[in-house]
Length: 218
Image (cartoon, rainbow, N blue to C red; front, side, top):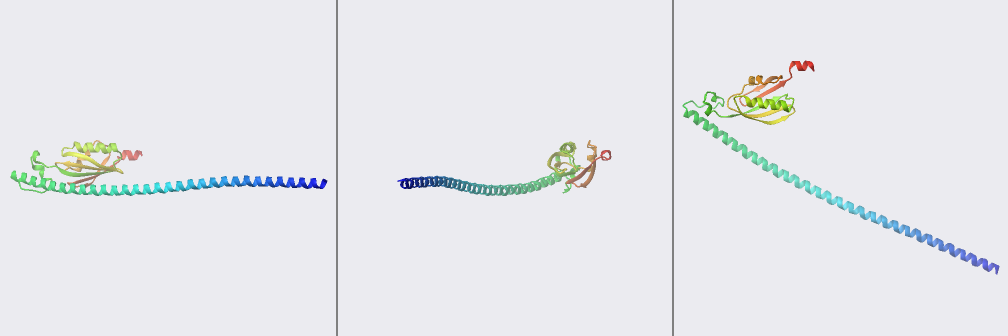
């Protein structure tokens, strides 16, 4: 009897051990199954992110191409408009020149195509001529504005407008009724020394220099 009881207890112990091992395996299997679901979910989210990124990249590329195409069309349209305006300005210039010749002939004077010959004409018959003013060494926008106002105050100048001010170089577009002399700029109320670089009927190019006193003090 004693040996039989021992055998029964051993069998019961082995059964319990086996059941415990089965439960452990089931727990591990459940853990791995949950981990596998987590990995699959992360993979699905990553695929969705990649898909959205690809869509956004394609949309951005399409938008860029569309913007470039629109910019090209606008540039072509603007160029065509400017060319047309240039042509019309040339025609207008020829018409003004022809009208000026008719006025001169009507006054009984010989026709002269020099644009500055109008100095002997009555003020009401003088025509305005374009003049480009280029000034180097302009230190600030305030100085540029002061110079523009000074030019506008000269008696020969009908109008003057700023075209560009970059890197200390000022470009002005003026309409004058008589030739402008570089020496007239010496009356500008500014301590800087003015040097004439180019002096033609259609272009005056100047350079501003700091006074010797300022350079010495520096």
